Image (cartoon, rainbow, N blue to C red; front, side, top):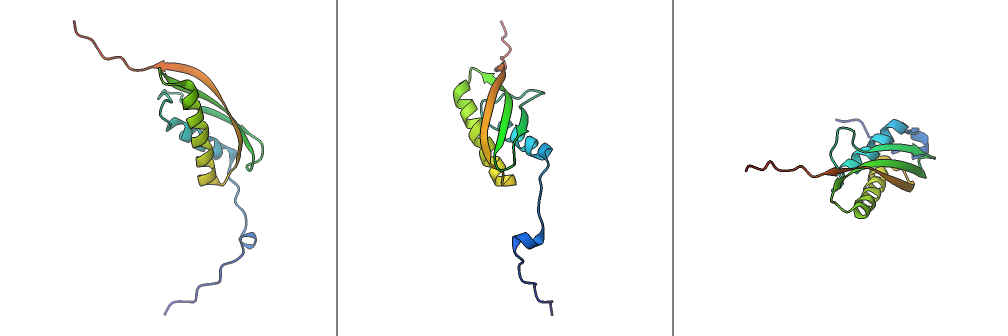
Length: 113
């Protein structure tokens, strides 16, 4: 016979959870790197975060694949970053400022003549 399950406590009585800024930064960079149009480079996306977890301000440097559309890629990155931070860390995003740090040409095929 199993022991009775204790009644659920109010969230305020169970304690708190704080997610380190480094973890939030990694979530941002990972979310950005998964967006189509973000170039796969050794360095990849690089983020800096400021503000409280409920209203994060994000500065994000991105390498973009050339000739993918820069504006559409940046918009998709903003959306992906906001959604992933909300889903994984219950964090809010005030704004995501994107700087395109590189345009990376698509890999060329070897031509045989």
